[in-house]
Amino acid sequence: MSAHVIVGTEVAADIRAALKEEVAQLKEQGIHPGLAVILVGDDPASHSYVKGKEKGCEEVGIYSEVVRRDTSITEEELLNLVRGFNENPNIHGILVQLPLPKHISEKAVIDTISPAKDVDGFTPINVGNMMIGDECFLPCTPHGVIELIKRSGQEIAGKHAVVVGRSNIVGKPVSMLLLQENATVTIAHSRTKDLASITKQADILVVAVGRAGMIGPEHVRDGAIVIDVGVNRNEAGKLVGDVKFDEVKEVASYITPVPRGVGPMTITMLLKNTVESAKRLAN
Ligand code: GUN
Image 1 (cartoon, rainbow, N blue to C red):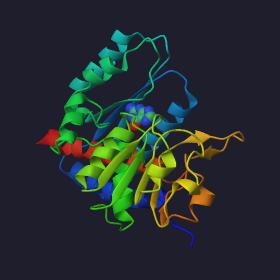
Image 2: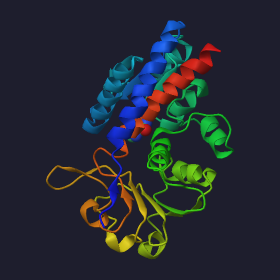
Image 3: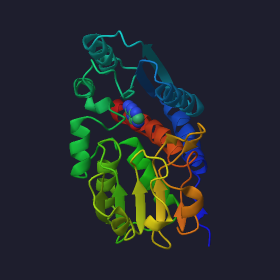
Image 4: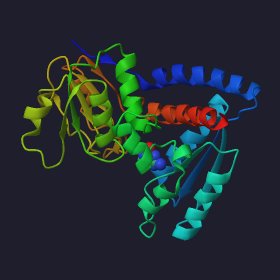
């Protein structure tokens, strides 16, 4: 039987509708959530992501400021932009779009963002607090993955979750969040031997590698929940995930598509964190 398709755009629309109401109420109390986004260079994918973030803010009523700079910006100039937003009372969330040009240290930039405004959840303070389950901003894509599973009505506790990929942005944090939801978690990566023997054990399979179609039906157990975080362009220029959707759909019980799966959830979780930050900073 064909899997139930978890449509991220629909889940995201529900969450955004609730956020829009919440923002309207906050404005009545004089709290106007604001997000600053800094984009360096001309990477088309980054420009497209930032446009989506701007549109998302507009949709729910968050004030947004987008600073676009070309690659001639120095690290110190970029750090000064971040420092300005750290001090700016109209801004509650700061996001520096990654990747950055090679002459700028991503670590130096992330370390400069105030943890209280780090709505990406990338600063060491937020990462550390996430590890110990303390108050923090959860990173947006991993948080979106957990929400998609929960809102599909599926239990996470007690399930065997296999995460393929170990990036700081997705693989590592999503593994930690699944663990906090009481899953038994296995992390697989590029050096894992006999990947299919590991992924076949998964009740929940999260794939975040960035290689088009690397997961086929031979990797998936009957009835597994499959969450595809990959965003790739195939030879025809079409957006595709890491999972062979049409084939895996016949084996899985639940599956996310690409596009319209995890992607819209990432921006939605960013909006949610920005609203949360505005509330925290107002108190
Ligand atoms: N580049 C790709 N994904 C992300 C993200 O979630 N946040 C930022 N800042 N940059 C990214």
